[in-house]
Length: 267
Ligand SMILES: Nc1ncnc2c1ncn2[C@@H]1O[C@H](COP(=O)(O)OP(=O)(O)O)[C@@H](O)[C@H]1O
Ligand SMILES: [Mg+2]
Image (cartoon, rainbow, N blue to C red; front, side, top):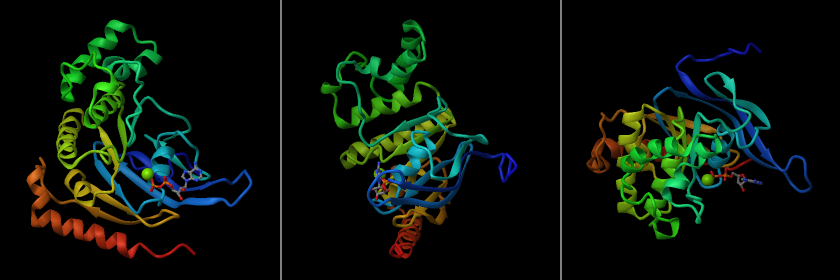
């Protein structure tokens, strides 16, 4: 196969016929989590991924993050196979996973510290980002003093501090109450507009997926496949009020129908 086989120059992140099974090498029954997943995320796009619980969304994100290797197919960043975590790929999971003994500043700058960036520069890069994500005044606070929403803001900043080209978000707002969640998604849209990053975000919330994304990818139940792609034709900038618009409702309806029609049981 040519290394550039099918490489779309506008695609920054690509999954190429990815399949993944767990437990292939051990005892017990292997679990086929993903099957033949191909997707392209265009540079600067915001793509949402939705699908029923257990369909392999987290597995796909971990593969694209280079945290695990696919059993079939490959993941590519700018046409180069992703075989290990990359500085150009930031990841935020549902749980913030902050280090309780490090304050906000030191949690956010951990990736820079590991990369050997000196303390002054770490601080100089973190302080504007801390303000940018709405945590001004909390640089010295400890995780135990933060609300769930604030902790997720710190996790987002920790992913952004390395200025990644691509941001992978795995249900980053799922544990938050509705109002906190709404504030965070609007702040995320602002950050995205400023940085021009490429975002792939998993969410359970269909309306949220439509409000945020340029395109919503729908996965089938396990083994996860992409069964529909719904382009989101809403204008930008997006506003929270759009959640209640008939246009968004119609698109969310298309996504919901695709999820339901993708629900053929596993053979
Ligand atoms: N480390 C693992 N070992 C074995 N099975 C796993 C592992 N991680 C996920 N799975 C299984 O793979 C399937 C997909 O899981 P996951 O990617 O977490 O789904 P989702 O994020 O869509 O809810 C599930 O059946 C899950 O139990
Ligand atoms: Mg998951």
